[in-house]
Image (tube, rainbow, N blue to C red; front, side, top):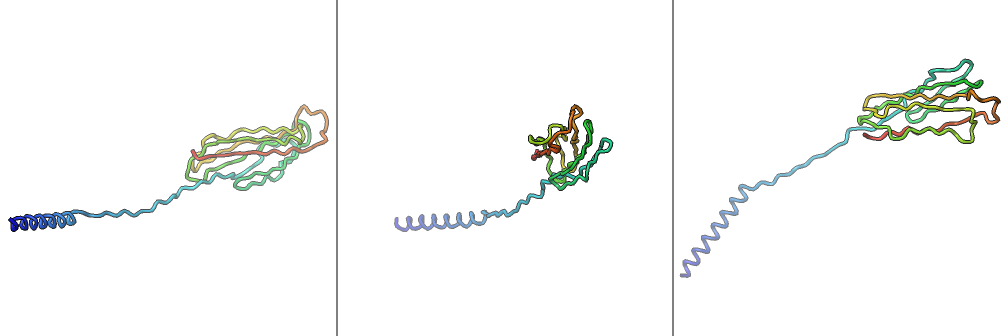
Length: 163
């Protein structure tokens, strides 16, 4: 009987050993290595500013711009005079952009005889495309006298976000 137990235990050990060898022969460990890289870029720029329509005897100055700023110095002579500037914006990036904020605020302490108006650029600016807007500065045609304060600065925000 003892021999039978030993044979059974030996047989079970051999079976377990065969199962372990069989499992390891059919088990494979797989390894995955990888790297992800973002190659897109965000690049919305002002590309130009030009005087499009100028009243006689007015001076649009030499408008200046960088990728993100515009500066102009308009000189108006008499009531009703105006200068219209065309500002170009281009999407050099790889993402489409949506206009989120377009707001121009004239200086409160400046001359109320100087009026600013703007058109709005396209709401959607696809990658690789361009849009524009007009900025008009005008000497109020209803002004009856030369104001004490003769200048008025405007500050603008043009904000695009990823679509």
